[in-house]
Amino acid sequence: MSYRGQTSLPADLRHRWGIEEGGEISFIDLGDAALVIPGGVQVARRELHRVLRERYTAGATAIGDPNLADQ
Image 1 (cartoon, rainbow, N blue to C red):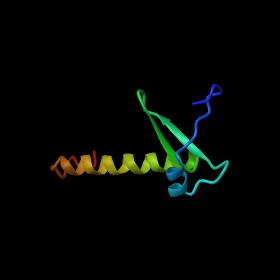
Image 2: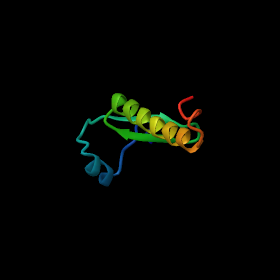
Image 3: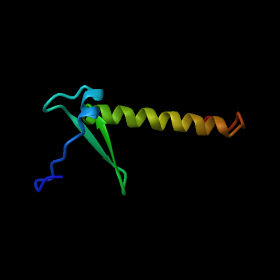
């Protein structure tokens, strides 16, 4: 990290994610760590909603009681 708070991504990540010079990434603060998501804030929000929806569905399904699965 630079003295101005700037950071850089390794070249292999930039190439894999298709990030050109000036491309957008987002950071999600996890408390003791940060999650880096290519594509900017909107992409980060969509990805977070997707993951939470999957986890909720998996948890609700694991309950096993059909009367509680949608609660």
